[in-house]
Length: 241
Figure 1: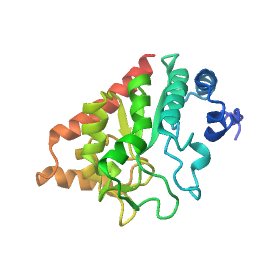
Figure 2 (figure 1 turned 90 degrees about the vertical axis):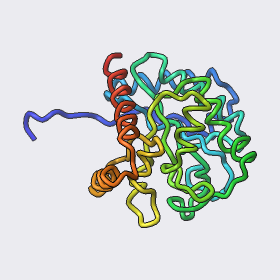
Figure 3 (figure 1 turned 180 degrees about the vertical axis):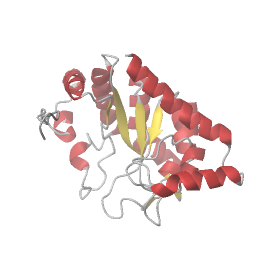
C-alpha cells in the first residue's frame, strides 16, 4: 500500500552443498561464506540457518543436496570453512544442522536412529565436532529424530555433555521447526532440560508445558535460566557487532 516499505527478495543462488563439496576446496567455501555474509548484511539477517551437514547415508534422503558428503572429514572441514567465511565479519552467525543422525526422509520427524557409540562418534558426530572445534559456530540446530530412543532435542547427552562439555561449544542450540508439535515429537520441557535453548518457531503449548514442569520439579530453574542466558548472550553479541 502507499507509503509502505518495499523489500526485494533477489539473492544469489549458490551451488548446493554437494556441488560445493565436489570442489574439495576449503578456501572456495570460505569465499562463498563471505559472499553469504554480505547478502545477510543486505537483508539484515543475523543468523544463517545453514550449513546442513548430515552424512549422506540414504540415497532417498530429500535433503542430500544440501549436505556435503558421505565422508565426515570432508563434511566437517568444508562446514568449518564456510562457517569461517560467514562469521569473519563478526556481524553474522551460522547454524550447523541437523544435529544429529537425520539421514533419511521417511518418518524423518520420529524415526529412531539406532547407532552404536563408536559409529555415532566416528561417522555421524565427527563432522559436527570438526566444525565446532575449528570454527566456533554461533548456533547448532538439533534434529527431529530420536537417537537410540531419545529425541535429539531432548537429549542432554547430545546437547550438553557432548556438544558443550566435550567439544567446548559456547553458542545457542535451537530445535528444528515444530519438533514439539507431532504426537511422537519431542517434549518442550525436556528441550530446556537438555540444553536445547530455543524451540522453533514456538507453539502455544510449549510455554504451558515448561511452566508445569517447573512447578512440579521435573525441570530445574537453573536449566531454564541457562537456556535464556545463552539466547540473550547471542542476541547481545550480534547486536553489538
